[in-house]
Image (tube, chains in turn red, blue):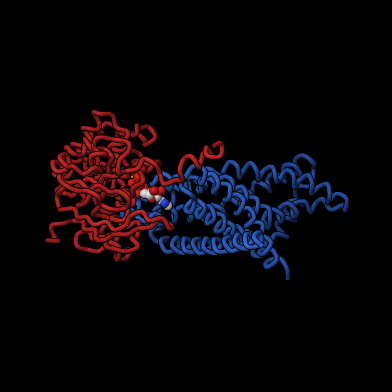
Amino acid sequence: MSSDNLVEIKDLHFTYDRRPILTGINLSIPRGKVVAIMGGSGSGKTTLLRLIGGQLKPNSGTVKVDGEVVNEMSHKELYALRRRMGMLFQFGALYTDLSVYDNVAFPLREHTNLTESMIHDLVLLKLNAVGLRGAHKLMPADLSGGMARRVALARAIALDPMLIMYDEPFTGLDPISLGVTGNLIRRLNDALGATSIMVTHDVQESLQIVDYIYFVSNGQIVAQGTPDEIRNTELPFVHQFIYGEIDGPVPFHYPADPIARDLQVEARG
Amino acid sequence: MNALTGVLRYLGNYAISSVWRLGYGARLFLLTLLYSGESFKRFQLVLKELYSIGVLSLVIIMVSGLFVGFVLGLQGYNTLEKYGSEQALGILVALSLVRELGPVVTALLFAGRAGTAITAEIGLMKATEQLSAMEMMAVEPVARVVAPRFWAGVISMPLLAALFSTMGVFGGYIVGVVLIGVDEGSFWSQMQSSVDFHEDILNGVIKSFVFAVAVTAIALLEGYDSKPTAEGVSRATTRTVVTSSLMVLFLDFILTSLMFTS
Ligand SMILES: Nc1ncnc2c1ncn2[C@@H]1O[C@H](COP(=O)(O)OP(=O)(O)OP(=O)(O)O)[C@@H](O)[C@H]1O
Ligand SMILES: [Mg+2]
């Protein structure tokens, strides 16, 4: 059973300084699927991806990737595992001193002994897959935000990873690029035989391309299901999220004193 | 009572964070040495940094060296002339440059020109998650980013200091011999006979090597440990200049007292 899941997270707790961010997450990501993790801003989605990638260590609980416990790995094992992972960062994180071409070639040059002519072909193929073959000579500073994200995607899949993690792949994209990127994520996943985890706010787009959805709130999984189940759910949380209602189970406000006290309205009586 | 506990708390906090930072710095330094082998195996990484750290500092170093030489020529001549020993101008110019001004002024200029660039570049790489992305690609940032810059700094600074001293001697020659008219023969011959290779030149090189390690390591640490925000990076850049300048002057005092007192 467990070998059907590429990623398994059990009772995961994580605290930044003293502030609890994740308080008992359980989830599993089946092989070959595209799974979305949704939740409000600051709910710990990026943190969760970093825990899966081993960049952060949980306070308790386990993160298993491909049957191995990530939070117990040595530095060497972790780096070996990461070679089989690709991660798309929220803002692309392209290397600003390298051209688009060299950015995509970077993982190939670091981790393989391919000749430059093979690297050349692979890089152009990956760039072609994200529609940016023509931009290979540009520097990251010359790209728009959406283009940078697509280059970063080409770089993330350069080594044909078994697991691809996307941090907010849709933010800042126009409706057309949004649809294109969504399809791309699905097609890449199926073409590479990979498994994808996608962290996003974009409910409508994700419902169309993913196989399963988890909702995170207050450090826990509060809802989950296939797109059809999610569309038909009665859960107030999910309802609020899908229809973008301002108040509901997900508070819009970061915890604070009552506004009257902060603005000192009471004093005036 | 309350103020007292406040002060104590502040001091305690400061002490703890200082020790913590020192440990962090030491760890980064050791890791850098540990990963240096990889940088030397892929020497083109170091070469690229040698260009941006060393070659791009050439102009400022050469121009400063020349002007310091001019000033040494003028001041030296004014003083020596009173004692009727202006032929010793060559010695004065050469010794002050090789022993002190070359290594020290080069290190200070280097901190301002290359040190700040290193800190800002690494700080920005951190702020834009490039270092994180590298880790996630299973490429160790210390090996790929930090170590090549470290060695580029350590290699280039002694060379820059030598160049500074050379330009300074040349500047002293222009002012002393060409403009003021000190005897050319005695200018060079006295210099040659009194500057000792081991005592003066080698010690100067050792100094500038030590300064190179200090300045480059501080610049790297400040960048690597900076807060990943625009403000954090700008603060780190300032700290690089302040800390490494003070460190250079302090180390210079220590080294001078070890080397030139018997
Ligand atoms: N380095 C850090 N130190 C301390 N707290 C942090 C740090 N990084 C994030 N946090 C806190 O952890 C919480 C979760 O952050 P995270 O980046 O995982 O949120 P997110 O779900 O990805 O949000 P968004 O959708 O806005 O990207 C936030 O409230 C944030 O304040
Ligand atoms: Mg995030």
